[in-house]
Image 1 (tube, one colour):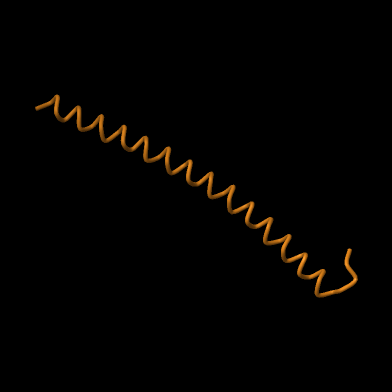
Image 2: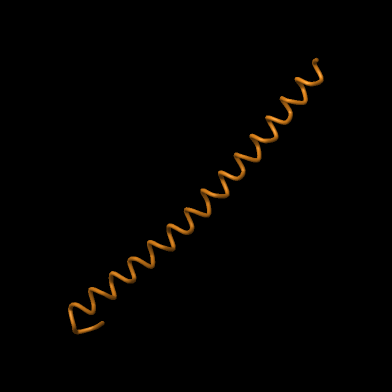
Length: 57
């Protein structure tokens, strides 16, 4: 690839960091979507419980 050992090491580090950034972004997006779904379901459950308590009074 490149004859200079330091330059090759730098290029390899940049490629590794770029791959890690892509992985972190994908995982972060998945975690964010999952947490948003959980919060939405919790809001629905709390609303249903509140309505059922109000109806029982």
